[in-house]
Length: 461
Ligand code: CAA
Image: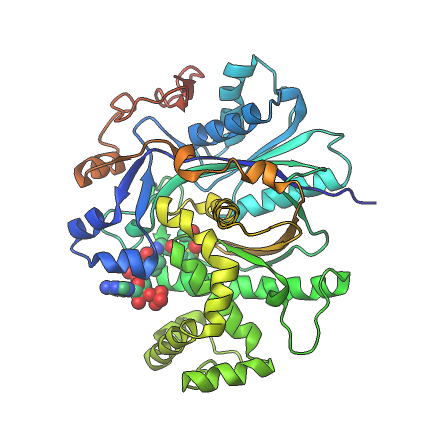
């Protein structure tokens, strides 16, 4: 018999420096509305000169351990998922353990296991899944697993990716009696394909990106994984579909990977269009829109050929716009997705951590609205370029309020400092050394320097 497993608690670490979208747009000669309304970006968190992904991961990890009064002996596994790796061989969780042992004592994590996971932004979901199964199988023997997702989303200056940057870490505590959410067993579904939508060759600090290609591929891959999820959810009996219903009717809250806030809306639009088009309700919706669905039912060729078909793209864009203005879409958007997008607008792209920051955002802002989340099903659409998607779900536990009542994104980030575009570019281009930090970290792990000596990396100041 499988044990239950899920997320018991969740902690975040977001750097306090940020670039304001308006300042950024002005500096790059862009319309600020493109960032704020077009992409949903208001602020992009950026790391100080003395912060790196390992320090952010260690800070998030320490927060979750301190808050839950855990000692290293309570933790059986510590995984870090990232696409901002520091080393081709040495795993990021080893750096994190090195920092945590400054607090908990030398070799205090010696019994613990774990690896660094990589598959662009989806790797955190694979790490969660593997650790959930470790717990389900009874291997944890009462110990917790910690999965930390930590990234710096950094693109070339002047590139179209530059306005989808951000930085931060999310630590998730997993066990067999989770207070927050239990994952649904035997429904997790994946899709995978060798692709070059976004990749970062060895030695290169910023990725090579085919932006519009990556947007469409994200949606295609998630849809594929959702189709597989649907079959499993029906065959395991967790969801029973009646005539005229879709799987999304049974997912109360949808959390998507968010490279930028509006990507969630884009993905929801795509999934609903595909799910609803075979249902009787679709005819009524399309009639009101006064336009025929431009996507034919048959496969439409390659992603390149779809993007190159200007006439189709224009019609599709118009159709999407009209669809998002319908009452039916708005109802699904407001009730299932909107609250998960708020944090993304405030901090920007966190790569692996974006999906989980969205989950955290949904919990906090739904709680603030007074929504009762108990027994609600959350569906997750995870995507990593390269490319792979994972769709899975979980159910909120009656004890969730114990955790969610203390969530306060603003307070947890702390006092933020807006950087000028000049400061931002100096940090971006690594013109400042780790000791020329803009802010003084208070009781945080920070980077002292880079090198092979253990004293250099990750001191707690
Ligand atoms: N006012 C209001 N809205 C405006 C506007 C204005 N003045 N100008 C443009 N817009 C709207 C556009 O209509 C568009 O809306 P829709 O998405 O609804 O069509 C939106 O703003 C964005 O405009 P563009 O598509 O023209 O934007 P772009 O081509 O300059 O760049 C991007 C967008 C492709 C996401 C780019 O920022 C990029 O390459 N980012 C990095 C890659 C990325 O994030 N890909 C996402 C999927 S892959 C992934 O998720 C993995 C990962 O984490 C990287």
